Image (tube, rainbow, N blue to C red; front, side, top):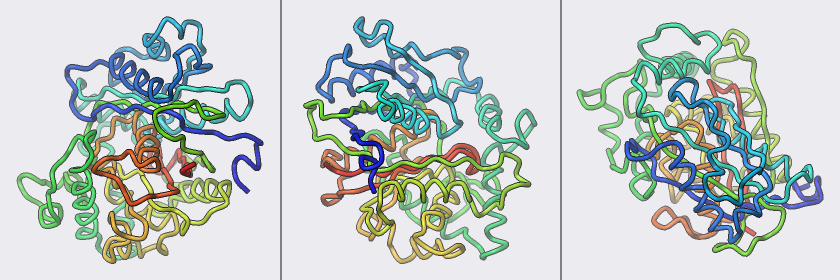
Amino acid sequence: MSLKDQFGKDVLLTGWGHSRFGKLTEETLESLIVQVATEAIANAGIEPGQIDEVYLGQFNSGMMPLAFPSSLALQVSEQLANVPSTRVENACASGSAAFQQGTKSLLAGTARTVLVIGAEKMTQAGADVVGAALLGADYDMAGKPSTTGFTGLFAEVAKHYEKRYGTVSDVLGSIAAKNHRNGVDNPYAQLRKDLGEEFCRTVSDKNPMVADPLRRTDCSPVSDGAAAVVLSVAPTGGATAPVRLAGFGQANDFFPAERRDPTAFAATRASWQRALGMAGVGLEDLDFAEVHDCFTIAELLMYEVMGLTEPGQGSRAIEEGWVFKDGKLPVNVSGGLKAKGHPVGATGVSQHVIAAMQLTGTAGDMQLAAPRRAAVQNMGGVGIANYVSVLEAV
């Protein structure tokens, strides 16, 4: 049973826009939002006045002084005057949270066309400010001093994993190398250099240990950027064919670390099951996936959580080539957060845009051979807020 079978209507991605990710000193949060929103509206083939509602995914958490950005999208056009606009925040999953809120407005019948934007400006803040802001997404470390920040939290996950299943250092290096290699073909990516497995696996002056066992190449960078997508209940006659949302899932885990198995990511697994269940498909029906690799250990765990391998066997997916561009389930062909960058609020929307480009044959050098169905997975905190979407070519 598909989403349309359950709700009696389609949710279509009919237009999208995407900025470059990186240190964008010449851009402001406003300019990024206006850029991608304008592009998405034009790509959908509609006028700004046809937008019924706007959702903006942004984390902020003190990284910039402006803490009330919901109306910035209205700067696109006078036609957007009085259009309801809401900022949505759910840590690093803010973009997908905004996407699902827009979806629910369409399914509720309170809107027919919704503009969803994800945006973040991070690089203007000092490392200490960014570190403290990100730690605000952790129950146990919020407001506390830390020399390793969020990297330290995922390093603890990696240590627990190694205690249960054995060393992962080389495997994580292979994941980093794969995503850096993929990022070369992504014009939006922040890091567009093929570093190779040896460099990513080796601790060096240029690749220092950040929080054992995670090296610099195991960590996504601090980024600026934005992405936008127009959601509609019917085709809008845009520049490209629409993409159908076949299913979606959300699940939240308990916030205190003591209430979670550190390597199970149980709520992340639940979000996958809910999305695939709503879409009426299995993992074998997917042609690719964009997953939340804020750190390489997160991607390794996603292989297991999504069901590609059994727990503790995620290394098979990379060692046997399953997740490479020519494998049975390519993962993070965009370069992922690791190479594309991770402007927190933008990430979830970016993942949906990249997937839509793949499914419409408009992904340029990133393009896979005629994919028909994809999954997008985005999470906030250490597997706390979890979102998965299943998208299909129309």
